[in-house]
Length: 166
Image (cartoon, rainbow, N blue to C red; front, side):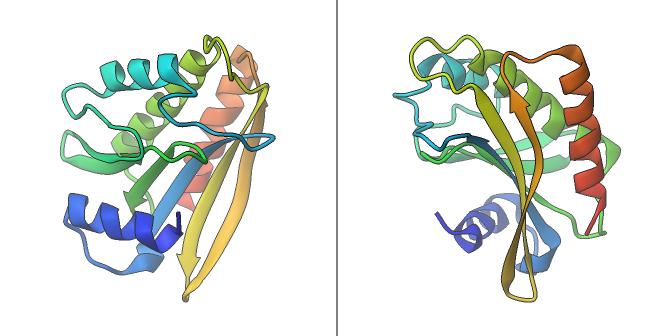
């Protein structure tokens, strides 16, 4: 799935301008890469759908608009891993948007720990941006499961920092 396609879907759902340089993607990806669909991660996606209620349900290979106190972002399900797409029109994410994205990712990772069959041992959190027509990808943090409190703090700090930078 291309980054432009993810941004195009987010533009439609969020209703924001098509200025691709002002969008950010936070991708949750198993390392080594493997399938993350509803069939491979059934417990995780069932939990995510409960967590995002009333904004879902998210369907396999689908996307959903999440709107918390007028702060909007899109959650997408891909075989390559879940992806959060947000519009950063003013350059950085608001505190509420940042908090909502972090809470969703941490909840997803905690649920993933309980996955019975295809639970990965390591997860990468990757920031993707489009800058002047080129995709820039950066590993925010690699996390070994199960999560520890100190790792959750590092994850929080890393995502906050990542959503501040342009």
